[in-house]
Length: 473
Length: 105
Image (tube, rainbow over all chains, first blue to last red; front, side, top):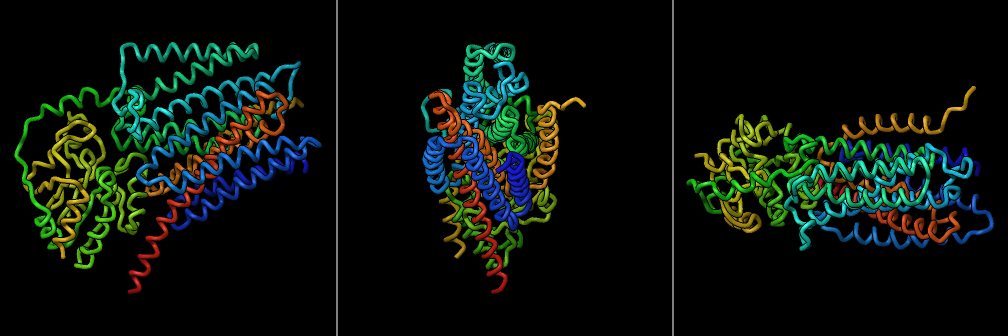
């Protein structure tokens, strides 16, 4: 197998990866796209095996290492993919980002230790200057991705006692200064390595990058996790591209850039949906002060009703729009909601779902949760597609969502002014299910709850919906 | 003629790939953003190619341990990423079947 042929096969694999992303433009083509992705990865791995066979000649023991690693890692991956609950997808994705980051660091270390093995031709006994630079970039991006993702994972799962793994942001005086100094130190060590190719600066740089990854993520609050996960997605792609540069492998560069731009676009979409600038998320600290105000808000009268009232209202309407929020998923009420939908449709009511981009804890999370409950995707609408219909809707049923339906976003001067919202307040009737009157992530009071046409139903989403189901019969 | 530095050629590929990625990803339907993330996770595990070379072709203990660990970590993503994406996409399919059945009733 000539080197040219190897590279051509890599090109084929790269095209498969582009097809994999392209397939996701519609649910119908997405499975084929995923198959393309798997095919591309298989081609890439088999080609590399062939390349190793060719390069290693007699000594084949190296391949045993490779297969050993693949069996262990692959087995673990398969088990996780099978067992993970859909509500836990953000954790899984964060975990996977950390794998890529660490893997990139390991490869970079191996490349510095034995450049020849990875096909880097030495110049005067040293790694060429371009590759040194790329190794340095690949390593620090990988290290930041790793430690940042570990923190994000902890914050998302919320089940660890350690302070840095808790959702509340950690802010301290001079935080940005510390980060800046560390970043400059890291770059300094990078330049030192770049000039001399010594281990010492390389190791120091790596250590600082790991610390920096932690420091970048801890000031970001739990509510901003969709942005963080998307951002780390992007980083993991750039880390892969960086390794591609160091190894002169165009397939790694292409795949890495696809992932990098995908993550960047998702971060942009999430920031926009939350009405935050990317930098304010990265610099962190949001929610700390505003959260404090929430407790002081005085008790105002709301109209509350029972499940029977809701069932009556829903059963006698022509059109219903359900606005699911993460509270719905926490209560595991998706299946009950789906049954309710079916009953209403059987009664001749038009039922649709309205999804805000940040309805879950990661982009598109709510769509997956509804899909898991077998809600037909043609009943599920994105914000832009359904917002104009709220005015003609009889009943909007808000389940476990808060900020995304807060009309304060239309009031200049409000903390969330300008945030895109679902215009639930335009409907003839509004039903809101919440566990209590507690405010949402933004810590703001929601005017929608106090409107005359709004009925509040307090309680666990699953229990409430099940009661409505009984009442509908 | 002067030989073009391979880093420059890599840069060309990099820029063009970002351009392709940008356009392809904007076309992804928002409903599939979570599968997009898990599939990009699997795709970025393409670093497994570098990891395999490191595991198989290095001679020192350091190189081999690093290579082996990198292969194992990347494999988690290759297998896990694609499988969990498939699992999610199957959910979107199941529903669709139901709709067709419902329509024929």
